[in-house]
Length: 502
Ligand SMILES: [Zn+2]
Image (cartoon, rainbow, N blue to C red; front, side, top):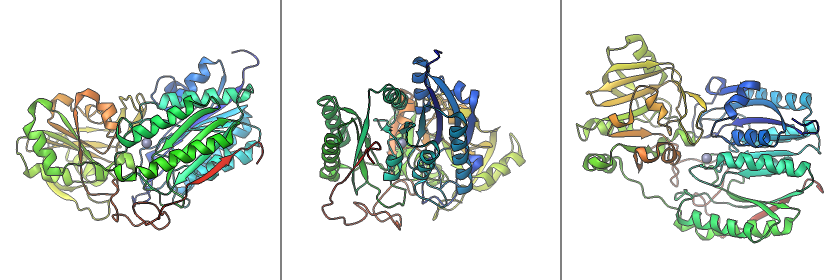
């Protein structure tokens, strides 16, 4: 460490909050670390915070670790818990007096009292540290970026890929750009253009319209050295907040007008391609028939799109389990279901004993528990380490977890908390090897493709729940967007954020 090295405070506050999940996300749902523990995890994990820490370490910057607070997506965050986290971060920032602040935030966190938690957090942090300390944030591509957030920070960058294969690079960029500010090479001026629409489907960046629009963004950046970053957000559609919409955020080196032009054209591109953002999903029966017919492609991973924990759904759907009990009596599957009450019953019964109970369906409105009879074959704390690459190396927990075997072929993974089931470690940590099953059910629509990789064949399945948007299926009180509402031919809202002159 050289004596003149800048001192940078780092922290992570990560939650994607689904306003249609009735169960709040509370303190017990979060993995919380600080200090040396935060630094040790960030040295190797697959997160944006890891990218920040690794880049700062490489540049021999003095790192001041504050806190890391992460929970799987779920219902709105308990407001009192959020306030406690905010106060801790601000207290650290005041006490440590850093030269800059680098944060990993999701960008779509809401609490039981406020919709724009990150906007509130960042406004508070800015007020505490004053106008001159650079603040950089690395966001998830599914952030709901708000003017309050951009008004408080200097650097705002998202990962570019969905599924998110580039979160480490996102963090490295945040760190590099903060250092560029400190040495005078960058005077950030950011333009945001927003259009009142969501992407009802085709939300992956590897192909289709999104791939084309990201290419347009890359070309624009390549043709203009003053453009340092273009982030395109797939706005989180379960945030019932005003001004949600697809956002293009362009970070320039003192070139706000150019940024506005590029952001505006990218936001228009979302709108002009809106009819192409559709998914081709299989019915549950079609998915199970595919598993039964295609022996050589097993195991399959069936994405339970309606009950995606990765979009904040509770993970308590029994729809695929119910179908699998009655269709093809030889398929071996593994299906996670959030249900603390049934976990208690399994623990009370003990390993090797048969239980008869009704599982799942207790949290999501409209769902019902499903009666099952099966043998308890595994009991654990539910703690595990994500295999990655997305979030690889990060500790996570499903709470106490029981595996119940039905008919000698279907394994129900009963979890106390909603699980990050996009990762195979959810299953392997419970003694379920990938080669032992014909299919796995995951509560994820995209990231499981990254983390299961070539080990399984993905199938996207149309299922009920609050984790997949279909027009008219959810009641929005504040948000107004296409295709849920008639927004006419909308005007793109463009705004420039230049804290030096504001
Ligand atoms: Zn995301």
